[in-house]
Image (cartoon, rainbow, N blue to C red; front, side, top):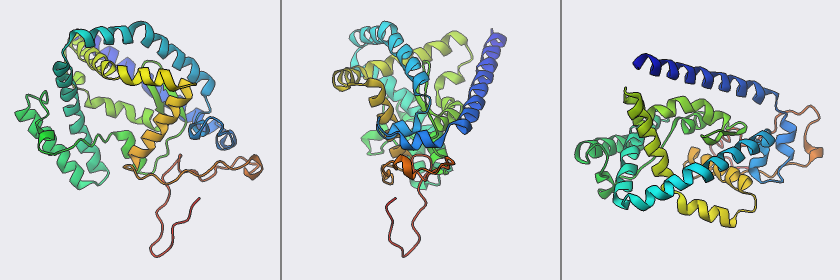
Length: 285
């Protein structure tokens, strides 16, 4: 049993490595001109060179959600009491606090890192491995830093927007960070394959049940759900990288302003804007 699980794990990692390699190759081939000049779909359009393919994957995910995930989550929410579902959320959030502490250290944020360590220790020891969120009662808030945010703080741009089957919205940067971010899941530390899949399934269904109300609101208000979710995802990730204080995104230049060679235009969607020098007034792009 263990050997078969290890083989599946190795195959999954090899497939992910191949996908990342393909993404980096495609990212280098995508023309900057089309990304910069086409802002008709909002800020995210400049980062969506593979929109045609992304929409197909998005439609596949939506169909899977409509036929399987949403009905299961709806039934789960009706049968399982809210306090139990909240406890499940707390358990997985506690594991996320530990990974958040690591990423805050990597980003040089000492105080949030210390808070995450205290949160994780308190809830693990006194909250039955995180089932009870004791730390929040003492005013210790979540930070939820992941490795994708860490790469952003280090200066790595988001890259092209991608929709992955089953996983959903992502970017080149977040895809590269995904293998490390997945190490925060408690399921990876369970050796038995059936229990491992059970924990992953519980996390997915519990999270989907929590988002039932939000998904209904989006269905009601969004004329183009794909564009709405894409722009919301990119703006949220950008806000998280800059801790809610992201520099202003400049308007897309006219086609005449784009160099004929397709040279990269300065765009903080791709990389953080450089800090202003001391004593100089900040300039707007």
